[in-house]
Length: 79
Image 1 (cartoon, helix red, strand yellow):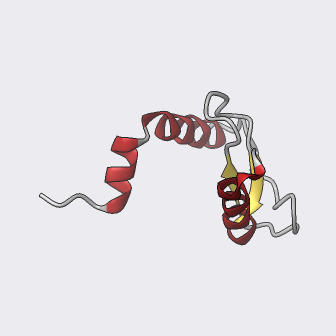
Image 2 (cartoon, rainbow, N blue to C red; image 1 turned 90 degrees about the vertical axis):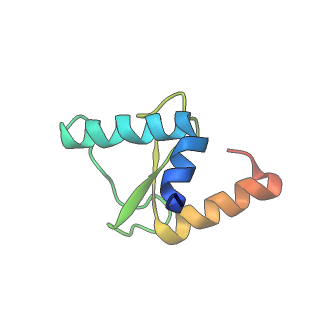
């Protein structure tokens, strides 16, 4: 059976999956409020976890800024 890419990623990244689930639950319960992108102000933002051991400690970034942050991190820019 061929698994979708997301399923494979979840199997290979259990800590990240746990952090995403914790945050999603907190947002649903009203414990965390989604904010606009901290870089450009776009209200359509997504969570970036600098540290997966702290699932509620996120930076809110739009998709473009989030991708740019991951590129910066891959190039050795740190967290």
